[in-house]
Amino acid sequence: MSKKRMLLASLIVASYCAMPVANADEHASRFYEDDAWYDVSEWFDGNDYNPTDEAIGRWDNETFEYADNRSSTDQDNDDINDRETHYGDYGYASDTNRSNTSTESNASSDDRWFYDYYDDGSSQRSNENGMTWFSLYQDTNDDGVYDSYTRYRDTDNDGIYDAFTFYSFDSTGDQDQKAKSEAQNKQKELSSKTEQVSGTIERMKTVNVRGRDHMVAHVKGNDGKATVVDLGVKQDSHSLSQGDKLTASGHRMKVGDKSILIATKAKTKSSDLTIDRNGRKYTGKVTSTREVTVQGQKHLLAKVKTDNGKSMMVDLGPKDQLSKSPSQGDQVTVQGVPVKVNARIVLMARTLGEGENQSEIKRKQAKSKS
Image (cartoon, rainbow, N blue to C red):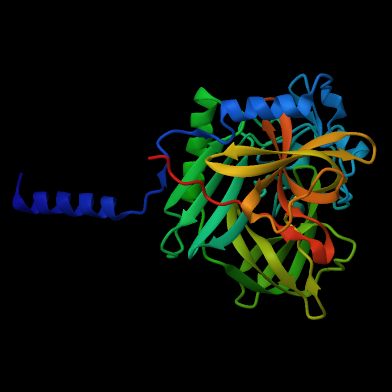
Protein backbone atom coordinates (compact mmCIF):
# COMPACT_ATOMS: atom_id res chain seq x y z
CA MET A 1 0.00 0.00 0.00
CA SER A 2 1.39 3.44 -0.90
CA LYS A 3 2.08 6.08 1.76
CA LYS A 4 -0.74 8.24 0.35
CA ARG A 5 -3.25 5.41 0.65
CA MET A 6 -2.08 4.61 4.17
CA LEU A 7 -2.44 8.27 5.15
CA LEU A 8 -5.93 8.44 3.64
CA ALA A 9 -7.00 5.29 5.45
CA SER A 10 -5.67 6.66 8.74
CA LEU A 11 -7.61 9.89 8.28
CA ILE A 12 -10.85 8.02 7.56
CA VAL A 13 -10.44 5.86 10.66
CA ALA A 14 -9.60 8.89 12.80
CA SER A 15 -12.64 10.76 11.50
CA TYR A 16 -14.93 7.83 12.24
CA CYS A 17 -13.57 7.41 15.76
CA ALA A 18 -14.13 11.11 16.45
CA MET A 19 -17.85 10.84 15.70
CA PRO A 20 -20.05 11.02 18.84
CA VAL A 21 -21.38 7.63 19.85
CA ALA A 22 -24.05 7.04 22.48
CA ASN A 23 -22.74 5.04 25.40
CA ALA A 24 -25.29 2.72 26.98
CA ASP A 25 -25.50 0.07 29.64
CA GLU A 26 -24.12 -3.23 28.42
CA HIS A 27 -27.41 -5.02 29.09
CA ALA A 28 -31.01 -3.89 29.11
CA SER A 29 -32.00 -3.36 32.74
CA ARG A 30 -35.34 -4.22 34.30
CA PHE A 31 -36.69 -1.11 36.02
CA TYR A 32 -38.26 -3.17 38.79
CA GLU A 33 -36.14 -6.14 39.82
CA ASP A 34 -38.08 -9.41 40.05
CA ASP A 35 -37.95 -9.80 43.85
CA ALA A 36 -39.08 -6.23 44.47
CA TRP A 37 -41.89 -6.46 41.95
CA TYR A 38 -43.18 -9.74 43.35
CA ASP A 39 -43.41 -8.15 46.78
CA VAL A 40 -45.18 -5.06 45.38
CA SER A 41 -47.72 -6.96 43.30
CA GLU A 42 -48.61 -9.20 46.26
CA TRP A 43 -49.17 -6.11 48.41
CA PHE A 44 -51.29 -4.37 45.77
CA ASP A 45 -53.42 -7.32 44.64
CA GLY A 46 -54.25 -8.87 47.98
CA ASN A 47 -56.55 -11.86 47.59
CA ASP A 48 -59.19 -10.32 45.33
CA TYR A 49 -57.36 -8.82 42.34
CA ASN A 50 -59.62 -8.00 39.39
CA PRO A 51 -57.98 -6.15 36.46
CA THR A 52 -61.24 -4.38 35.61
CA ASP A 53 -61.06 -2.62 38.98
CA GLU A 54 -58.00 -0.63 37.93
CA ALA A 55 -58.50 3.10 37.43
CA ILE A 56 -55.95 3.69 34.68
CA GLY A 57 -57.11 1.04 32.28
CA ARG A 58 -57.94 -2.61 31.85
CA TRP A 59 -55.37 -5.22 30.89
CA ASP A 60 -57.62 -7.91 29.43
CA ASN A 61 -56.66 -10.38 26.69
CA GLU A 62 -53.54 -8.33 26.03
CA THR A 63 -55.55 -5.24 25.05
CA PHE A 64 -55.16 -1.96 26.91
CA GLU A 65 -58.52 -0.18 26.84
CA TYR A 66 -58.22 3.59 27.04
CA ALA A 67 -62.03 3.67 27.07
CA ASP A 68 -61.95 2.51 30.69
CA ASN A 69 -60.59 5.95 31.56
CA ARG A 70 -64.12 7.28 31.09
CA SER A 71 -65.10 5.65 34.38
CA SER A 72 -61.95 6.78 36.17
CA THR A 73 -61.12 10.19 37.60
CA ASP A 74 -59.07 11.20 34.55
CA GLN A 75 -59.56 14.97 34.58
CA ASP A 76 -57.97 16.25 31.39
CA ASN A 77 -61.15 15.93 29.29
CA ASP A 78 -59.63 13.67 26.68
CA ASP A 79 -61.77 12.65 23.73
CA ILE A 80 -61.22 8.88 23.71
CA ASN A 81 -62.87 6.75 21.06
CA ASP A 82 -63.44 3.02 21.49
CA ARG A 83 -62.57 2.38 17.85
CA GLU A 84 -59.13 3.98 18.06
CA THR A 85 -57.20 0.75 18.30
CA HIS A 86 -54.10 1.63 16.28
CA TYR A 87 -51.16 2.84 18.34
CA GLY A 88 -48.41 3.01 15.71
CA ASP A 89 -45.84 5.79 15.88
CA TYR A 90 -47.53 8.08 13.34
CA GLY A 91 -49.92 8.22 10.39
CA TYR A 92 -53.05 9.70 8.82
CA ALA A 93 -56.59 8.85 9.87
CA SER A 94 -57.57 8.30 6.24
CA ASP A 95 -54.91 5.58 5.96
CA THR A 96 -56.22 3.47 8.88
CA ASN A 97 -59.43 2.34 10.49
CA ARG A 98 -59.08 5.01 13.15
CA SER A 99 -62.05 7.23 13.90
CA ASN A 100 -61.32 10.91 13.27
CA THR A 101 -61.93 12.98 16.40
CA SER A 102 -60.60 16.19 14.87
CA THR A 103 -62.86 18.99 13.67
CA GLU A 104 -60.59 19.57 10.70
CA SER A 105 -60.83 17.63 7.44
CA ASN A 106 -57.85 15.40 8.06
CA ALA A 107 -58.36 13.38 4.91
CA SER A 108 -57.80 16.34 2.58
CA SER A 109 -54.46 16.48 0.80
CA ASP A 110 -53.72 20.07 1.91
CA ASP A 111 -54.02 18.97 5.55
CA ARG A 112 -51.20 16.43 5.36
CA TRP A 113 -48.51 18.91 6.38
CA PHE A 114 -48.42 16.90 9.60
CA TYR A 115 -49.80 13.55 10.70
CA ASP A 116 -53.25 13.07 12.22
CA TYR A 117 -51.75 11.00 15.05
CA TYR A 118 -48.29 10.36 16.46
CA ASP A 119 -46.52 9.26 19.62
CA ASP A 120 -44.43 11.89 21.42
CA GLY A 121 -43.05 9.28 23.83
CA SER A 122 -44.29 11.44 26.73
CA SER A 123 -40.91 13.10 26.30
CA GLN A 124 -39.53 15.38 28.98
CA ARG A 125 -36.29 17.35 29.24
CA SER A 126 -34.57 18.56 32.40
CA ASN A 127 -31.28 19.95 33.71
CA GLU A 128 -29.65 18.11 36.59
CA ASN A 129 -26.12 18.12 38.00
CA GLY A 130 -24.90 20.42 35.25
CA MET A 131 -26.12 18.07 32.50
CA THR A 132 -29.10 18.05 30.12
CA TRP A 133 -31.36 15.01 30.42
CA PHE A 134 -34.07 13.76 28.10
CA SER A 135 -36.62 11.07 29.02
CA LEU A 136 -38.53 9.07 26.43
CA TYR A 137 -41.04 6.22 26.83
CA GLN A 138 -41.45 3.49 24.21
CA ASP A 139 -44.33 1.22 23.19
CA THR A 140 -42.35 -1.51 21.44
CA ASN A 141 -45.26 -3.74 20.44
CA ASP A 142 -47.76 -0.93 19.70
CA ASP A 143 -50.35 -2.24 22.16
CA GLY A 144 -51.20 1.21 23.50
CA VAL A 145 -49.17 1.25 26.72
CA TYR A 146 -45.47 1.95 27.24
CA ASP A 147 -43.19 -0.97 28.07
CA SER A 148 -39.73 0.64 28.23
CA TYR A 149 -38.05 3.89 29.14
CA THR A 150 -34.82 5.64 28.11
CA ARG A 151 -32.92 8.50 29.74
CA TYR A 152 -30.48 10.31 27.47
CA ARG A 153 -27.85 12.69 28.82
CA ASP A 154 -25.61 15.36 27.35
CA THR A 155 -22.68 15.16 29.74
CA ASP A 156 -20.74 18.14 28.34
CA ASN A 157 -23.67 20.28 27.14
CA ASP A 158 -22.43 20.45 23.56
CA GLY A 159 -25.91 19.85 22.12
CA ILE A 160 -25.37 16.11 21.56
CA TYR A 161 -26.73 13.34 23.79
CA ASP A 162 -23.62 11.20 24.25
CA ALA A 163 -24.93 8.57 26.68
CA PHE A 164 -28.17 6.88 27.61
CA THR A 165 -29.64 4.35 30.04
CA PHE A 166 -32.35 1.95 28.90
CA TYR A 167 -34.90 0.35 31.23
CA SER A 168 -37.47 -2.32 30.43
CA PHE A 169 -40.77 -2.47 32.32
CA ASP A 170 -42.26 -5.60 30.82
CA SER A 171 -40.35 -7.10 27.90
CA THR A 172 -37.48 -9.56 27.76
CA GLY A 173 -35.07 -11.08 25.27
CA ASP A 174 -35.55 -10.09 21.65
CA GLN A 175 -38.10 -7.41 22.46
CA ASP A 176 -35.69 -5.78 24.90
CA GLN A 177 -32.98 -5.70 22.27
CA LYS A 178 -35.37 -4.28 19.69
CA ALA A 179 -36.42 -1.49 22.06
CA LYS A 180 -32.83 -0.75 23.02
CA SER A 181 -31.81 -0.60 19.35
CA GLU A 182 -34.66 1.83 18.68
CA ALA A 183 -33.50 3.93 21.62
CA GLN A 184 -29.98 4.11 20.23
CA ASN A 185 -31.25 5.06 16.78
CA LYS A 186 -33.42 7.78 18.32
CA GLN A 187 -30.36 9.25 20.01
CA LYS A 188 -28.91 10.10 16.60
CA GLU A 189 -31.97 12.24 15.79
CA LEU A 190 -32.07 14.22 19.04
CA SER A 191 -30.45 17.49 20.03
CA SER A 192 -30.22 18.74 23.59
CA LYS A 193 -30.35 22.37 22.48
CA THR A 194 -33.42 24.50 23.15
CA GLU A 195 -34.91 25.87 19.95
CA GLN A 196 -37.15 28.90 19.56
CA VAL A 197 -39.39 30.00 16.72
CA SER A 198 -41.22 33.30 16.30
CA GLY A 199 -43.63 33.93 13.46
CA THR A 200 -47.16 33.73 12.16
CA ILE A 201 -49.55 30.78 12.44
CA GLU A 202 -50.46 29.74 8.89
CA ARG A 203 -52.44 26.59 9.68
CA MET A 204 -53.63 24.59 12.68
CA LYS A 205 -54.98 21.11 13.27
CA THR A 206 -55.94 18.79 16.10
CA VAL A 207 -53.61 15.78 16.32
CA ASN A 208 -54.26 12.62 18.33
CA VAL A 209 -51.33 11.84 20.64
CA ARG A 210 -52.00 8.49 22.29
CA GLY A 211 -55.67 9.18 22.89
CA ARG A 212 -55.37 12.88 23.70
CA ASP A 213 -56.04 15.81 21.39
CA HIS A 214 -53.03 18.09 20.90
CA MET A 215 -53.09 21.43 19.13
CA VAL A 216 -50.44 21.57 16.39
CA ALA A 217 -49.58 24.76 14.49
CA HIS A 218 -47.78 25.37 11.20
CA VAL A 219 -45.74 28.52 11.86
CA LYS A 220 -43.97 30.64 9.24
CA GLY A 221 -41.01 32.12 11.07
CA ASN A 222 -39.86 35.69 10.83
CA ASP A 223 -36.88 34.29 8.93
CA GLY A 224 -39.22 32.76 6.33
CA LYS A 225 -38.70 29.15 7.48
CA ALA A 226 -41.69 26.95 8.34
CA THR A 227 -41.86 25.03 11.64
CA VAL A 228 -44.48 22.61 12.94
CA VAL A 229 -45.12 23.18 16.66
CA ASP A 230 -46.92 20.90 19.14
CA LEU A 231 -48.59 23.17 21.72
CA GLY A 232 -49.68 20.36 24.01
CA VAL A 233 -53.11 19.12 25.05
CA LYS A 234 -55.90 21.15 23.48
CA GLN A 235 -57.42 23.54 25.98
CA ASP A 236 -60.44 25.82 25.85
CA SER A 237 -58.26 28.67 27.10
CA HIS A 238 -56.11 28.48 23.96
CA SER A 239 -57.93 30.80 21.55
CA LEU A 240 -55.46 30.55 18.67
CA SER A 241 -56.31 31.11 15.03
CA GLN A 242 -54.68 31.54 11.65
CA GLY A 243 -52.74 34.79 11.40
CA ASP A 244 -51.85 35.01 15.12
CA LYS A 245 -48.28 35.81 16.09
CA LEU A 246 -46.64 33.04 18.12
CA THR A 247 -43.34 32.55 19.91
CA ALA A 248 -42.57 29.02 21.11
CA SER A 249 -39.53 27.22 22.52
CA GLY A 250 -38.77 23.60 23.25
CA HIS A 251 -37.00 20.56 21.84
CA ARG A 252 -37.20 19.18 18.32
CA MET A 253 -38.15 15.62 17.44
CA LYS A 254 -38.26 13.72 14.17
CA VAL A 255 -41.53 11.93 13.42
CA GLY A 256 -41.47 9.84 10.27
CA ASP A 257 -40.25 12.13 7.50
CA LYS A 258 -41.31 15.26 9.39
CA SER A 259 -39.84 17.41 12.13
CA ILE A 260 -41.79 18.93 15.00
CA LEU A 261 -40.96 21.32 17.84
CA ILE A 262 -42.34 20.01 21.14
CA ALA A 263 -43.07 23.31 22.85
CA THR A 264 -42.62 23.69 26.60
CA LYS A 265 -43.20 27.47 26.52
CA ALA A 266 -45.29 29.54 24.12
CA LYS A 267 -46.89 32.97 24.00
CA THR A 268 -48.93 35.18 21.72
CA LYS A 269 -48.97 38.98 21.65
CA SER A 270 -51.67 39.02 24.30
CA SER A 271 -50.83 36.19 26.71
CA ASP A 272 -48.67 33.22 27.69
CA LEU A 273 -50.03 29.78 26.80
CA THR A 274 -50.32 27.07 29.44
CA ILE A 275 -48.58 23.89 28.28
CA ASP A 276 -48.90 20.90 30.58
CA ARG A 277 -46.81 17.85 29.61
CA ASN A 278 -47.01 16.02 32.91
CA GLY A 279 -49.43 13.36 31.66
CA ARG A 280 -52.86 12.18 32.71
CA LYS A 281 -54.38 13.49 35.94
CA TYR A 282 -56.08 11.36 38.61
CA THR A 283 -57.53 12.08 42.05
CA GLY A 284 -58.19 9.62 44.85
CA LYS A 285 -57.52 8.54 48.43
CA VAL A 286 -54.33 6.78 49.51
CA THR A 287 -55.26 3.41 51.01
CA SER A 288 -51.68 2.30 51.70
CA THR A 289 -48.06 3.00 50.82
CA ARG A 290 -44.94 0.90 50.54
CA GLU A 291 -41.24 1.53 50.04
CA VAL A 292 -39.47 -0.56 47.44
CA THR A 293 -35.90 -0.56 46.18
CA VAL A 294 -35.75 0.43 42.50
CA GLN A 295 -32.33 0.55 40.84
CA GLY A 296 -30.70 1.00 44.24
CA GLN A 297 -33.05 3.83 45.28
CA LYS A 298 -35.88 3.80 47.82
CA HIS A 299 -39.08 4.59 45.88
CA LEU A 300 -42.44 5.29 47.48
CA LEU A 301 -45.37 3.46 45.91
CA ALA A 302 -48.96 4.33 46.78
CA LYS A 303 -52.18 2.39 46.36
CA VAL A 304 -54.84 4.97 45.49
CA LYS A 305 -58.60 4.37 45.39
CA THR A 306 -60.56 6.75 43.18
CA ASP A 307 -63.96 8.19 44.09
CA ASN A 308 -65.70 5.51 42.00
CA GLY A 309 -63.99 2.72 43.91
CA LYS A 310 -61.28 1.77 41.40
CA SER A 311 -57.66 1.28 42.44
CA MET A 312 -54.41 2.40 40.91
CA MET A 313 -50.75 1.83 41.68
CA VAL A 314 -48.61 4.97 41.62
CA ASP A 315 -44.80 5.13 41.65
CA LEU A 316 -43.98 8.46 43.35
CA GLY A 317 -40.26 8.20 42.66
CA PRO A 318 -37.40 8.41 45.18
CA LYS A 319 -38.83 9.07 48.64
CA ASP A 320 -36.00 11.42 49.60
CA GLN A 321 -36.98 13.70 46.70
CA LEU A 322 -40.56 14.22 47.91
CA SER A 323 -41.23 17.48 49.76
CA LYS A 324 -44.04 15.69 51.63
CA SER A 325 -44.81 11.98 51.54
CA PRO A 326 -48.53 11.10 51.34
CA SER A 327 -49.91 8.84 54.06
CA GLN A 328 -52.84 6.47 54.35
CA GLY A 329 -56.12 8.38 54.17
CA ASP A 330 -54.69 11.42 52.31
CA GLN A 331 -56.60 12.75 49.31
CA VAL A 332 -54.12 13.18 46.45
CA THR A 333 -53.95 14.37 42.85
CA VAL A 334 -51.25 12.87 40.65
CA GLN A 335 -50.18 13.25 37.04
CA GLY A 336 -48.00 10.85 35.14
CA VAL A 337 -47.39 8.26 32.45
CA PRO A 338 -49.05 4.80 32.52
CA VAL A 339 -46.66 1.90 31.89
CA LYS A 340 -47.13 -1.87 31.80
CA VAL A 341 -45.18 -3.95 34.32
CA ASN A 342 -45.76 -7.69 34.06
CA ALA A 343 -49.32 -7.20 32.77
CA ARG A 344 -50.06 -4.61 35.47
CA ILE A 345 -50.54 -0.89 34.88
CA VAL A 346 -48.46 1.53 36.98
CA LEU A 347 -48.63 5.31 36.86
CA MET A 348 -45.11 6.78 36.79
CA ALA A 349 -45.99 10.02 38.56
CA ARG A 350 -44.50 13.32 37.43
CA THR A 351 -46.38 15.67 39.77
CA LEU A 352 -48.10 15.38 43.13
CA GLY A 353 -50.76 17.86 44.27
CA GLU A 354 -52.53 20.72 42.52
CA GLY A 355 -52.13 24.46 42.05
CA GLU A 356 -49.78 26.12 44.53
CA ASN A 357 -49.38 22.79 46.32
CA GLN A 358 -48.21 20.93 43.22
CA SER A 359 -44.67 19.57 43.40
CA GLU A 360 -42.54 18.02 40.67
CA ILE A 361 -41.37 14.46 41.17
CA LYS A 362 -37.67 14.14 40.39
CA ARG A 363 -36.35 10.81 39.21
CA LYS A 364 -32.63 10.56 39.83
CA GLN A 365 -30.30 8.58 37.63
CA ALA A 366 -29.45 5.26 39.26
CA LYS A 367 -25.79 4.72 40.01
CA SER A 368 -23.92 2.21 37.86
CA LYS A 369 -23.51 -1.23 39.37
CA SER A 370 -20.09 -1.60 37.87
